[in-house]
Image: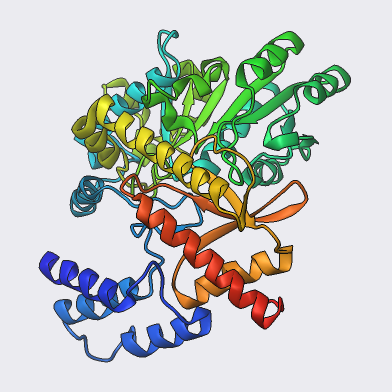
Length: 448
C-alpha cells in the first residue's frame, strides 16, 4: 500500500508540473471530480485502485508547499522524517484521552511538552505545555486560562494581532479586544501604556512574535515591563517566530518571551511538521489546572488514586492524535544544531530575496524581513494590478504568493519556509512576477 501511495504522489506531482494546478477553482474542481469517480460506489474498487486514484488526484490538484514557488502562507514543506513518524502514529492510533489508550504515547507527550516548555521558561522549576491543533487553539486556551484566573478579563492587543484573538473573545464570551495601533507592523508601546493606564479591571495583553502579514516581532521585553508595571497579564503569540529559540543567531529577537503568562508555539510553521503541531506553554504546571475535567469512564477517581495518569486535563478535546511523536522524532533526529541550521538558512533565504528585490529596477521592497516574510510589489503598479498579478500566477499554476496590506498599499507576500530554496529559484519567482505584471499592464488592470 505504501508503494502505491508513493507512486501516486509522484504521478500526481508530475502531472501537476508546478506548485499548484493550473486553471483556477472551477477547472480544478471539475477535473478532481471527473478523475476520482463516485466516492461511495455500489461495489468497492479495492485498496490499490482507490489509493492510486484518489492520492493521484489529490497530488495533481495540490498546492504543494515543497516547490520553492509555493510561498503564500505559513504552510510548510514537512520534513520526511516527521511525515514518516505521522504514519506510525496513524498505524498505532493511540487516543490521548486516557492512559489505557496511550500508555507510551502519554509518557512521550509529557516528556516532550516539558522539554519545549523548558525552552521557553528556562528559569522556572516546573514549566508545562499542552499540545494543540495549532496557534488558533493555543490562543483560545490562553484566553480561557486568563478568564479562569481573573473572571471576564479585558484583552488588549495591537492591530497586528492574529484574528484568532478576537475570535477567542467571542467564543469565550469576553469583551471584544481593545485594539491599539501597530505602526510599522509592531505594537505601539506608548499606546499600550496609555491603554493600561486608562482601562480598569483585570487585563490581558496579547503580543505577537511573528505576525502573519509581515513577520514582525513586537518589543516583547518593553511590553513585559509595561504589563508588570500595570499589573496586567501577558500572553505572547509566537506561533510563527517561536522556533527562533533554537537558533543562537536569531533567538535574541525573542528576548522577554519567558516573561509571559502563556506562549503559543506552532511547529507546523517554522518547525516543518505536518499539521497539526501546536503548543501552549505556561511557566508553572499548576497554571493548567483549570483544564481539569472529570469523566468516570476515562479518569475515575480510584484509577487516578491508584496511579493511572489523568489525561483529560491536557486538552479541551477528548479523542486526539499523538502529535507529540512526529515533533519528538524531529527534535531528536536533528538536535539543536540541525534545527538551528534549518532556521538560519530559511531566514538567510528571505534576506537574499529582499536583496534581489532591492536591486531590481522594477520592484519595490516593503522592508527588510524580520523572519522569513518578504513583501514587495511592482514599482508602478496600483493595488488592483497587484491583486491581478497574484491571481494570474495562481490561475496559471506558476506560483503561490500571498497578499498583505501595509502602509495603505497592497503587497505581494512571499512567506519563505523552504530551507532548500536556491538563488535561482528566487530569481525565477521574481521573473514570473514581472512577466505577469507586463501582461496585466498590456491587458488592463481588470480583476480576474
